[in-house]
Length: 256
Image (cartoon, rainbow, N blue to C red; front, side):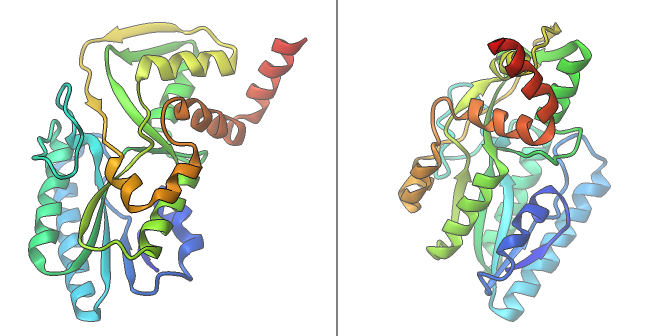
């Protein structure tokens, strides 16, 4: 596997480098927080360059898109339905998907839910919420929902999709456990032993991708324990790796 990029996802995919010799993974996109147009243009140029690279070497382009295009209330989050990007970032990724599909390159487009892990950047959702809870004040968007997938399971899913030679498909990569951000915060408070002051805002977005296609293409993902309640396991794994002292102290207090 050829990996372009050196960020959070690229680092976790490194153990797969020796496998999948015909795959090029583009893991050097822009993050989700607001950025100037220059950053979006940079990623567009990078996608164009990677398409030509893969066409010239008969490689499969693996592109990380986003589940944030499933932002409409009550939508099915289905890959085969007409996506409606609810954010500028989602529209940017949707435009890049269309460029890849029209290019003639072999591709695997993965629309990612929120992939979390112990070394994620501090601006990402769980790292930011954890820091806010520990500081005693947390900002919560009313009704906002996110699907969370631990990065270890993300790597397992990517490996399985490439191993089964899924090609020219768009696939949601998520857990199927789309929960309110308020639920995530309550679990963080419980695990960290902190009751924070909540600032509740109304600017909420729901990103809830369907995982029916993923389960059909790669049935072995069922062994990962995906589905209802998965978010608690994913958060606990994150905390035990990132903040073990806080979690262990809370466990001792709870059982004493």
